[in-house]
Length: 450
Ligand SMILES: Cc1cc2nc3c(=O)[nH]c(=O)nc-3n(C[C@H](O)[C@H](O)[C@H](O)COP(=O)(O)OP(=O)(O)OC[C@H]3O[C@@H](n4cnc5c(N)ncnc54)[C@H](O)[C@@H]3O)c2cc1C
Image (cartoon, rainbow, N blue to C red; front, side, top):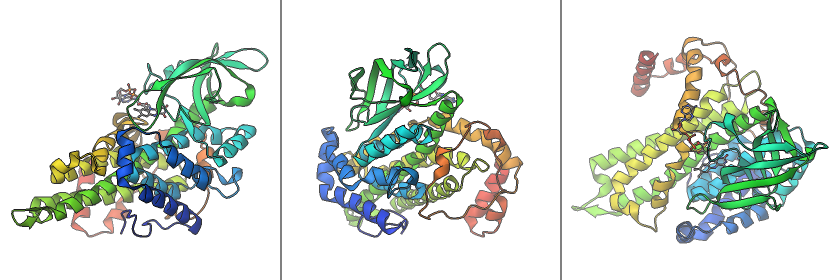
């Protein structure tokens, strides 16, 4: 019941308008069909058909414009999770264009630049996609060393000089939010870039995929004060907070991919007869499917619960900052395990080019590595462990948050530092209230670990 099934009502109930849009998205992909999805994947076709659908249905405009800036829109982490899952269910490339739009929008919605926000809302309404220019070829995760510079050019204007690498949607974005430093002061800055201007050089697509992951150069690209989004510590915080908003989605990408692969695998195994029996009757195959299913459900339940913490967060309650890297690191690596288990069952079938599975086996690997590697996220999780295990404090209970409201705090998160001061409730009473044998094992493991 909890797994997405295109032929059944959505497992996560949504308000009627959101339900309709997610339903139309599913219908778009079902009408396109698996053969065309695979052909476009193998031929690395830019997904103009999907973007035309996004534009026609105002899909990104409705889901990704905070209610303050749109007529019938809101930013709702819970319903965004549903769309995340659906897009990845049909292919990582469709998910990726939405994901980098989310990242690209972060600095705009966090900015105090009202004119830029209004323009962003209009561009989304017109079907625009966005991108986030943080990474550089030489510096990887070390964004302190960013080399992109804004050189003062008099009267509050600047020219941008430098390159960016691995920038999704860099070919077609209506705008990119780009991270750099002001030359001379090294003050951090986030500014808006329009890829259509002549000073923007699109060098190449770095990856072999339907997605466009750009290497780009800004050649004395003129930037006015009106195109500055954030500067100083606020720009630094916004860059980190944008990644915090975005990286949560990688868990849902993994869930969508693993769910589709699960269906394909069980269908194949159930219909394949060896030695006079269905493959699904082998005891080890039953075990592998059960294991894969349990992991998949746990991935989904954990990611869902983390959404509650996102949506209830405030400057006083930032507990979501622990559950977020766990989704990013643990849910995505569990997704890899699900695919490994399923692949051991379907074996040769998983190589066939007309299966979804062949894409899944490749794409599931991406999610743990992007937007912070596994190690970067473990390093982040470790910062919370002292308070989580040894300094429990009374905290408000976080209810289930599937209400159709706008997650306004995401754009007003303030300083990204101070993680070591975040306190958590004692989790022991929650587990103490359960009698299941596996919960008892878990209690024991937790005590030993502690
Ligand atoms: C397909 C794709 C799409 C992408 N899209 C975008 C995009 O749209 N916009 C964008 O800005 N970037 C994008 N990226 C870049 C991506 O975010 C980077 O890959 C990421 O920042 C890590 O950098 P790196 O891969 O160069 O690894 P490196 O930074 O070179 O890391 C090397 C190793 O050092 C370890 N390490 C680094 N720092 C730490 C630390 N603090 N603690 C512990 N270990 C550490 C890492 O775990 C890793 O094992 C994309 C990348 C790809 C491949």
